[in-house]
Image 1 (cartoon, rainbow, N blue to C red):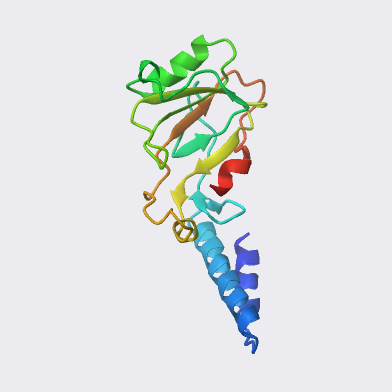
Image 2: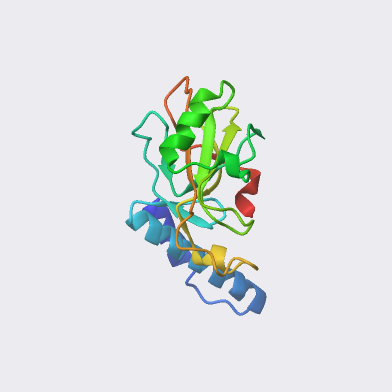
Length: 180
């Protein structure tokens, strides 16, 4: 991947006389530089270049991934309800494990939708071994350049996990909400 990013960067450095193409070339060069920087740090970028992350298989029975927000096909509880709040991610995982249909959980962070610390969302994933991911890792400058996102924190504030896996965990797929 690093070799590809460096090759792309070299190709984009040739001169161009067309202003529209020059702007596109400049954006492509910036994207290639971000890809190269992420690769050099042993990290990846999502397909849109909004999130920079380093994924490793979960090391606990809750499938915990820090700085991640997993989507779901349905929510088994409404995390905004104060009766659903918890003190730790482990408590949120335990609530999910106790609910027979829950196989994915998300907790904690405040964000643009007025969420508060302690929210525990119990969800359902089609395949908990390959969760649908909304956000993960660190927000990039490209994410912050989007309207309404300039005050984003350095890292995604959510903690997520999956339980009831029938096969080894993977880093999942990006959900349709990854473009928020």
